[in-house]
Picture: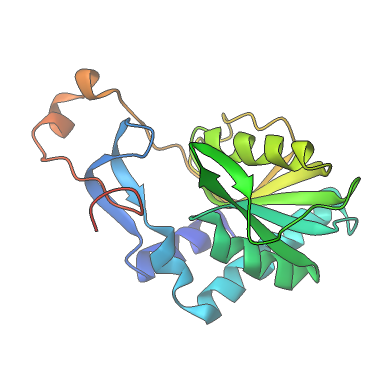
Length: 194
């Protein structure tokens, strides 16, 4: 899939929003990718993850034992990627402010783990999940996401395979461009307004 084809899937799902958005990092942005809308259609999720799995295999090969994702955004895409790769899927949840495994999930010592996220912006939650993989005894062999909205600038410490890449500017609340400052801000997604 090309970048344009991936973004067309997001537009068709009403998942590429324009306005003034408060991101989970606190930064502001004129565009927001609502990945849950794109993944609510199982056929669309399978199409996107089939293409992403092909990119991962081309970059990393077939030596993946497990997929691990940060909850909440990475759970669906992580599950579908694991299905495409023929491995199990687990997810890390936030417990007392830190990502941790729960629900009886474990990582076998030395397991080769692919960290899968829906969207990478700054890479903060991805790096935290990758650190958790190491703390649990696994080896993070790479990362994958549907959209790298850093335009390739986010450094995760492992190779990142992104289905599409786009650079969407972000701004601190006190340094908004005039055209964004006049639009009321909303906080979409799982950590904000519905």
